Amino acid sequence: MHGQAVPWPVSIELIRNRVRIELRQAIAVSAHPASQWAVLAIFYRNRRRWAEMETAVHNCANEAARDKHAGVALYDSAGVLIEAGREPAFAAKLLEDYLTGSSKTEEAPAFIAHIRLGRLKQQLGDAAGAKREFAAASAMAHEYNPAQDSGA
Image (cartoon, rainbow, N blue to C red; front, side):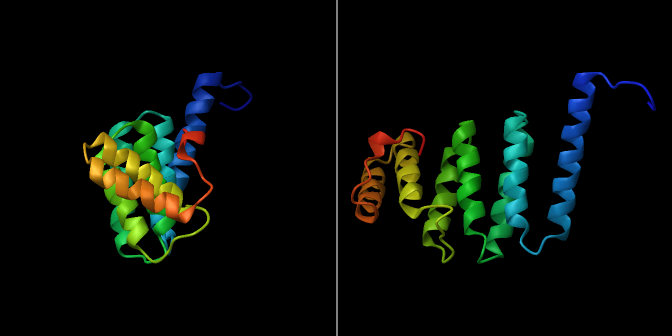
């Protein structure tokens, strides 16, 4: 390949493969691999590689269970599933785990987690649970109106 131009679609695929390999390497050496699993899940979601995305999300959840500092990874992984329209019950569990955990941060606002969880509960047919989550979000952010932010 020296001196020859690589066709554009091939070069993009080579870049994607390299990114995937580097993410896997980061997971292998990380002290907190849950976050890297969440990033890999995003990578797979963007490629519409659903089975691999779901595996990465589940691996993130498994790692987060062993790492009390992995709350944001749970929040992010729930977002991956929500945006992909996959596994709403598991996305709800991830958000519940995040909200009951001790590592909530501004990167993953709890009131947004409550709103997302409320929407998932609606989707899953749990109207009472949805109402509780929306009330919790409202109590945390008095001036926030979920109707203003359809992307939450």
